[in-house]
Length: 521
Image (cartoon, rainbow, N blue to C red; front, side, top):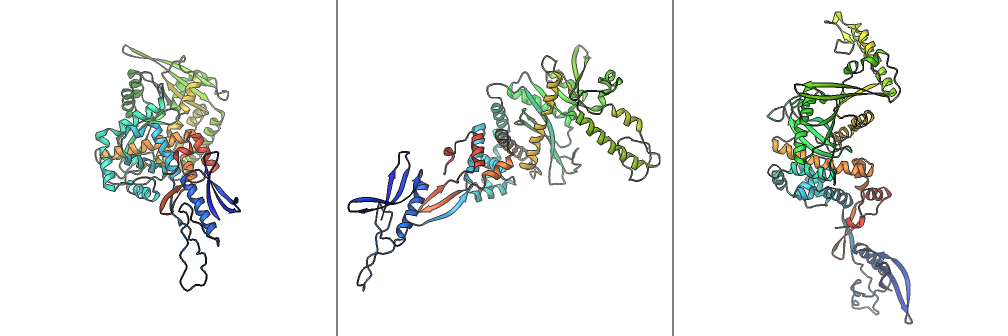
């Protein structure tokens, strides 16, 4: 019995077991066709095992060792058993996941903007399993998918962040990728806070307003994204800085960096202040911001006087002419009524009134509550008149914009504002999936480097989510179990790629990645 290799019409190599009788070749078994060295090595190993299973051995192409010489004192030499070439697994690694993430990172252009393989590895590691940077190095070593630097080397690379202006490079690259051949005309803006595991304040880490009611030192992060949630700009402010004071600096930096001349920014009601709107108008920005419900009686006084009998989805508008010296401007107040919102508002007010009544009657501890008036605990009473006035606003949501109707209709203003959930989703991804907080860095330079890593990881994650329709967590969970096997066959190390599942194939197709281009390394 002999092992025979045959080239097929497709270019693969078939491995067969054959024997010759009376000058004729007889195929005993077709073991399969190999398309790369790894598959060929496995088929040859299988063939060797077949030959070794009690069959006479032949030395073909050095695949099978020559028979051992006959032992002394034997009457008749017997064929020695064949010792098959040893093949054993020496490891496995999630090469497919790593190459997919790396392909997206490179496709965005970060590899050209930031010349550091260490930074690239840290970003991809954060997408896979967010942890401290030291823990990320340990994870990369266990994954065996990239050259892992020492901790000193890592910190030395990150120290280049400030001098090499990596954050500026990352923001410029992200904008160029998102804009393509055009320009990003609509941007979404929001802020969040990231806290530190420390009790000491400094020039950057300060105690300030926290939506989570934390009293730890924090920083304020301003994030600008496009309509899909893809990050465009990230900035860091002192933890005590008011959210409303972050908008103009971020927009000015964005416009200066990219020379954007026509830009519409969308922000939530937290950014609505007279000073902000005047600054936006003076700087030439068009804007859409959420309006507080308390503004509705002024904008819609005539309509509300006739009752709030609106149809579901109805859009109402009011225009205000403003003059500041020689400067005049027009602001549109756009209001939309939704029946589902009215039901929600009515349910919420019922609970608020119940809470106020319980406090006024002494059934609950005195605390701040809506529709509760009075000076001391004994003089608290429920303001039913304010509750009846609030009923007129059930179902209404307001927006303020400087964009004229020729640019955006009322319905388009509402739709543009509703896309703000994308920036909120990006913040949730940064905080949960990428675990941007808490931060353990002390210096401003280290904090900026950390945020640049989070920014790049966020860009990779948002791109994958938009392309696949799956969360980045689900993509990682789908691809990570598909591990590349690392074998040693006849003294050589061979990587055998994992078989693709249907879900993995769908992810690669959505990302337009050819599996052949990310084969074993």
